[in-house]
Length: 447
Image (cartoon, rainbow, N blue to C red; front, side):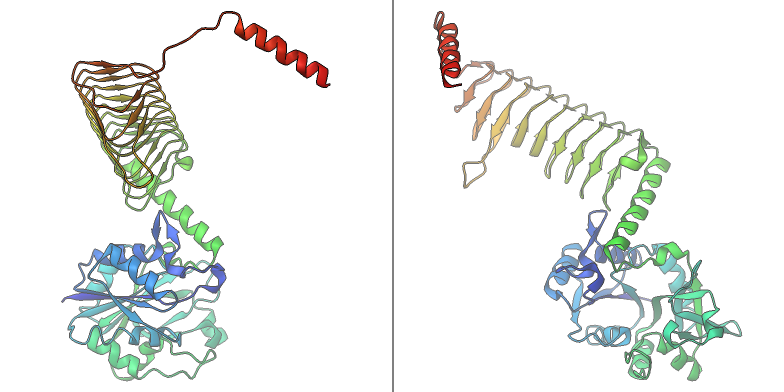
């Protein structure tokens, strides 16, 4: 049976106190919406429909950046969850398969949990994801009868007996497309909130003789985020899980609680990550590398045996080949650093290619931006760039070439040549002593 996803993301998230749609707030460097889409993507859905409302344009842009086949359905009025799901009916009018309803602000539901729901759908008309709550609080309750899910009762509508139930509703539902929308058509708004509850479809289904069941998951999977404090808790849960996974995969974290991963960080085994390292989105680090303390990596690739940091910054497009050394207070952006090259300290390499075994001296800068355009610097294999060299792009330094310390290089340096471009030193005998005496006398006179 083919599968489609409906992901609800229309809410404003009033408690977030933000101009940004709630589902676009980030966990592990990615909007919560993308976490929900990633979970559902494991089912290889035929269609994905995002129901958007507040900030619909931004929500749609984020969704399509992750999956350009995703469709956007608008919920112009927020009249409840059943009303929200109903907005996806038209995009799915030609779809004949199972639909799973997910929530853009519930980022931690695991793919294997969704797979269990699709399996349960083979024997039941409607499947609901539930959990045993340590503190049921104001969750909706799942009311069972004769091993079937009989109904879902919202807390505000529940009596004392129903509120004593600890099996709670996550909101995630699976049903055949035709069945889901047929049941939604029968949902009314006769409840304490005056809304169209998606949960009402269970009672309607049972009244029609359809079967319903519950698939259970850990409560942590169902965590919804509706405040800044909740977002911080979700980030902490994500980071704890990411650190554990990295360690289980053979990565050494010398101070795990200080390392922060993105949702798509890939780290090879036997890599060592020192304290206070931050990974932004789009980072791959191969096996046996070392990322030293206080480094920040984003959108880059680090090959086997490379050493980065401490206090290094790798920006998008940085490509480090095997056994590259990047030292303290180095920034690299959109540059290929070939095997065995060294960029040791206090240096900026941007829009560049650095050849194998080249040595980049301290304080070197590739001057890549003229105020309008970016230009490329190419440094050959085995080249030696003297400390405090300014490489004014576009410029090429050939294989085994050298630049003198303090040079401003504006023309290509042929292979094997030495380029020196600095003003001639002129010493003024005794001038410093006389100047200081004059200045001190002036200061004393002024006081």
